[in-house]
Amino acid sequence: MGTLYLVRHGQASFGADDYDQLSPRGREQAVRLGEYWRARGLAFDAVITGTLRRHVQTLEGIAQGLGAAPEALQMPGLNEYDSHALIAAIHPQPLGPADTPERYRQHFRILCDALAQWMAGVISPQGMPSWDEFSGGVRAALDHVRQHHAGQNVLLVSSGGPISAAVGLVLSTPPEVTIALNMRIRNSAVTEFSISPKRLMLQTFNTLPHLDGAEYAQWITHA
Image 1: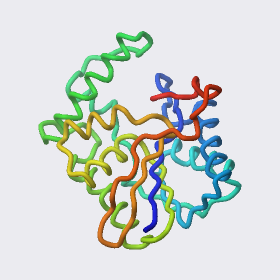
Image 2: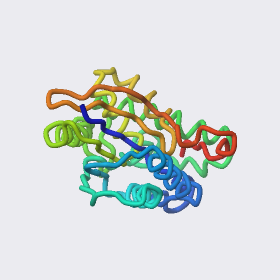
Image 3: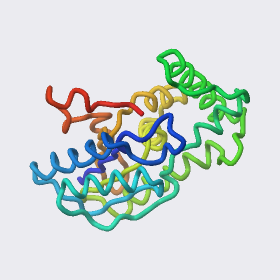
């Protein structure tokens, strides 16, 4: 069997005007992951990413650490949901910056509520697909891997929403579990699926083997 390595992007710019770019720490996380894999002799037969800047920048860092990587296939179905549109759909008043622990927790409490309503079809956030369309884009990426890359090592760089949706599809988890998984995926974390022509099977979830050391304790981030 081959292995599909799903990687959440490195730390982005949460709270900034433009979230969709890696922070300096996010770049370090990506390069470190590539270095970790290179030291263990891992090479990829195929690479797939979303089209967001943070996906592309994360792949660039991983490729730098690895020394090389195949040209990526970009699939828009692996792009993240719009958290601002989700929150606005149930909380039209501006939340203000998440610059204190309580405001940070409030932001994610409201986001989880909005995700649950979106997944249930209760709300239709402006400019966003339905949950069925969103999860369908993730399913299409997984089907592509299963049909074209069985027996190969495949790298997929995306975001927490699509990766948790992928785990949910493989394990048939209920919406509340998918949301809980989403909230726990750390920056540059690795989730692994075994690939066969008939199905994908979960092997690991949300691991940070490349940051397993006291010197990297401050590199572990969630946004």
